[in-house]
Every structure is written in C-alpha cells, then in structure tokens.
Length: 270
Image (cartoon, rainbow, N blue to C red; front, side):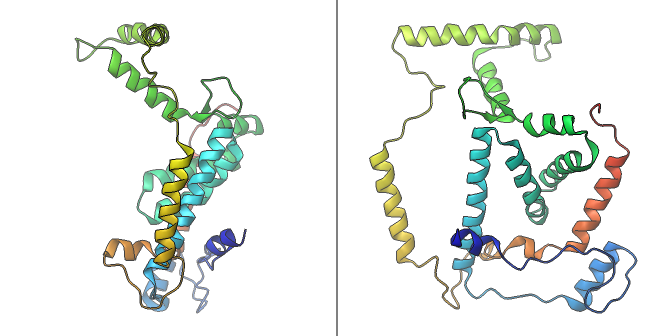
C-alpha cells in the first residue's frame, strides 16, 4: 500500500475550472489563451536530479496499471476497466497518442453523460468475450477477433483479391467446423494444440525473477542519487511524469471541444 501511495499520490497540475489565471487572476477569455498566457509568463520547468529513480518510478506506475487492466479483463470487471480508461486519457494525450485518448474520452463521456443506465451497463461490459465458458477466463474482444482473423488467414486461401460478401460469409460460417476438425486431427496424431495456454516452469521462473531483482537492487534503481543521469535522451525524458508536463488548459479545451461534438451525435437507442 505504501508503494502505491508513493507512486500515485503526487502533486499533479490541476485542470483549470475557468479561463482565469490562478497566478495573476487575469481573465484570458479562452482555454487556448490561458495556455499561452501561462507558458509565456508563469511557466517553470523543474529539473530532474535523478533520471534513473524517476524512470523506475514511472515504469512501475504504468506496469501496475497494466497489471490491474489485465486482471480486470480476466475477471470481466468492466467498471474497473472504465476507470482505467478514464485515468489513461491524460497519459495518452501527453504522449501524443491522440486516437487512444479520444477513444477513452468517448467511452467515459458516453457512460457518464449520454447513455441510459441500461445502455451504460451494456457498453461497459461489451468489451469482453469468454470462449471457454469458465469463470474468470475472459479476454478482450478485440484480441479474440484478432485470433479469429489469424486463424482465417492461416487456413483459408482466397483466389480472388476482392471476394464477394457471400463468399466471405460462407467461409466465416465454416470456420467453427474447421477448428473442430483440426483439433480432432491434432489430437488423433498426438500433435500439440497451438491454442492451449503455454505452461511455465515455476522453478525457472522464480530463479530468473530473483536474478532480475538482485541486479536492480545492486544498481539502486529505487534509491535517489543526486546527479544520476541516463545516457539516452529518450530515457531521461521518460523519467519525468508526462502528465506534469501536459498543458492542462489546452487539455481541458480539447475535452470541451470533443464533448460539444458528441452532443450533436446520435448514440445507441436509449
């Protein structure tokens, strides 16, 4: 618990509530104007004195988020996944991944403002698929579709580069039957099943993990050493919390603009 508090409880720059500068109280008229005003008169760049510790902190933070997301998908926890999508909006925006930021923002905006309670529950839980029928064995729907596409490409050959929809439908309907035939063939001849989960040797896994932990501990990556720097400029840049460097006034202007665009769009039936 103390580790997570140290990683996540930081002094983030607050999203401005109005277009008035919080420092000099000047009314800027727009969020874009507020952004230019702050960058011109009040911007202060903090210098990181230990990029190794900073990079380790930021990497652990994102790895924990990834772990929580994987567990949420496995257990079909749509509420937690939606919360992660909300949390990642400023990260995607700060890193320049605008399409991911927009997708997450649209999901959050739909579930918070535009959908009825019933449709909200459907949207939150529609991103999982369970092909095994077992508890806690869900997977992301887009990943399941990619697996289906790979199976189709590996086992079907199209002689026409532009097949008709009827041909595609016929081949798609036969895919489930073909999967059963191939599974029976592999089982009959004692061949391995590629779709089975790969087994992990617990002993070797723990041995490798202990080697990694020992190496990291010897190099004191979790300790603060003043003046320590990465040689790579990209790693030095990644050692700073990217959300701290995000222009919050511009970020809010972007969200307001996307929200106003969504107000004129037609969503799922209520």
